[in-house]
Image: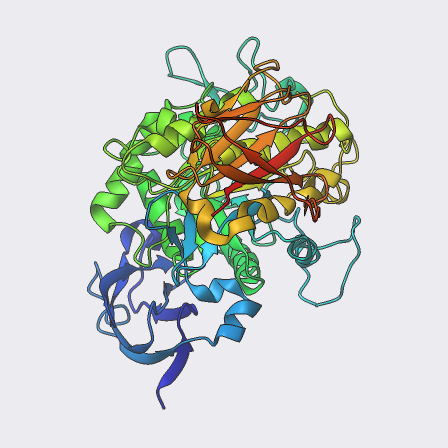
Length: 591
């Protein structure tokens, strides 16, 4: 009887090698040639321990599908295996239950925003759980509900955020050099890049805003161990630098179940395969760029059939690592050999300040298919989203690491009105600066998963920050006219004055985005903004004005919603904000 699957439902093909290999990770490549309606591609797989190899696939359309396996080895267990299945569509009701059934994330037709494959708008509202694959996000096999607190598990956290309105989680797949071994998690080189400095931090250097010595390395393993095996190959540092040619599939099996669980709850996972602190050691000692390209291939093949966004590196800071553009080398080599992910998975990265600044445009970064701003937090930096919006070809852009409440660099306590206010600046300011693809929230304690007794903020504290509860309000602002937000063009110069506050701050600035026709404008005013004028509108025209409260997520319900009229110079003197707080606004041309 022929196997029946749904469109976009992951299917796993398991192959058992008959030969024995000294290192299956480095020596063997497996694939299937997959054919179905409108699709004919080679889909690569990965080694999953012992003699097991897997290829994960999805059907992108209903109909008949068939596959046949191959490899770079003469192995009867890997070559010439075949199969077929029938793919059927989900019902509309089933899609409403889980939007991941609408397909993978892709750019809109104008290139500036995200949508599901079926055309449904997708605006990413994600939380930052960098160490998701590790034991810090507890996995319970049972379905018992555990309240927010020390005993809560990963499943409880996902349900909590889903109930609030989130639709994504950002994570790091691995921290290969992190352990409670007394050494820094970042291994630095001497001035001539010849020797690993085991217990040193460059003079004046800081990580996460605090002296490195006060933040000891943390275990980043799970029930399956660490992502790569020890001892390593770097002489004298075999206990610190793993062997990047020997991956540990058991670690990633525990990550698999969490990615699947996210998808089951309608969440898209943003998976960054490694953090910047592996940079120097990997390049100088561990077979750069080919070994890193191999790791990319392994990770992308492992998660290509999940609803996710993928990233070759988490490079949110460029101070003490490989120059950012050097990551283009392994990433471009990956594209040249394997092509883009077979089912259309988009590739980006949490760059600091931006993918465009750090990696260049797609002529340099051939792998890049969406843009991102990261780890430059104050409102002066939202401009990078506008720069990315205006770059050609158009790619979706989002803010992946804006203001974090409770972050050590920032003075206000969390939760507090000031911390919440700063977060809202990142949300609404980024959206109207060109971040039409989404926003990723983060909080101290949550992103680092600090469960140590001395940590000021525990995960369960951060989960309940009021700023996190206010994030889903952004969706009500974005979707006020449905998918039309995808046509907005960022232009803060349409509102004046727009920079009344300190440029390194979160108050006093105003933002605007409008359609090309100027028949709809969206604005956001930070706290302490002076009364503003909007310019560049249609002359002598009537616009309906509506205020949005970002603290409550409510459009003001006023039966006498006011109208404003532009003058012959295409300007409107806007009314004062309802209070000296931050406010959003919609201006719609009266027909």
